[in-house]
Every structure is written in C-alpha cells, then in structure tokens.
Image 1 (cartoon, rainbow, N blue to C red):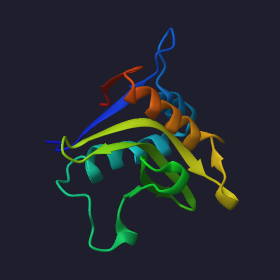
Image 2: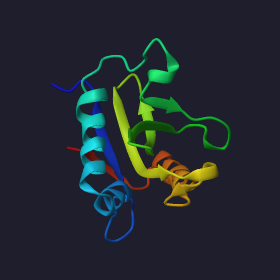
Image 3: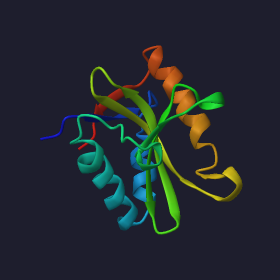
Amino acid sequence: MPIWKFKEYLTDDIPCRSPFLEWYGLVDEDVQAAADLLIHTELGELEDWDEPRRSRRKYKELTREHVGLCELMFKLGSRQFRIVGIRNLEAKEFLIFGALQKGPNGTTVPERAFEDALRMKSAYEVGRGNTRDYN
C-alpha cells in the first residue's frame, strides 16, 4: 500500500494539459517503466526518503534559481532523468509538474523544463490549474 500520494499538475488551458503525461507519451517504454517504478515502488512505499548517504537518495531539493522545486532522479544506463515537482512532507504528497532528460553541460530535454516547472508552481500557488492523482 503506497504511503506517498503522487499527483500531476493540470494547466488551466482549454482543454487542460498534463505536462508530465505529455513528456511520458514521448519517451520510450523503458523510461516510462523506470519512472513508474520510482514513483509507485521505490519512493511511493517508503515512509522516509532520506537515505543516510546523500549520494544514494532518489530525490533532491533544488536551490538557487530553482528553489522550491524538488526532483526525483533515476537512471537508465548512462541516461539521467528527472521528475520535477514540489514535495509536501507533512501530507506525504508529491505534485508533478513535468520531467526531463539531463544532457551534456547542464542542458535538459525539454530545454526549458525547470523554467516551465517554476511557472507552473507559481500558477498552482495562486490557485490556477488543477491536480489529479497519478496512478
């Protein structure tokens, strides 16, 4: 039984959009499976996400220009992926704004993934958009 609840952010566009599901639909099935495993098993069933060694943690609270966001991290071979959102520790909820693949020299695919996540976070905080459970 999951301890954490994962939700996806829906924009207030007409019709509404789920940036995470848009990304999910573009990646290969092995990436989809790894993302679902991370969400539903590796983190979803854990009470405490904090591994004693930071290097083994599957998440990171972001700082500097991305402060307020949290990223969930997973790898497939040499490819690194991030699911970006906000973590509510008290409610044991993670709201997903989107996802990305890390590229060389700090690049991301999609290119403005962190900026878009910050924009969605701001919209969410003023009551714009909606959420739904991610199953």
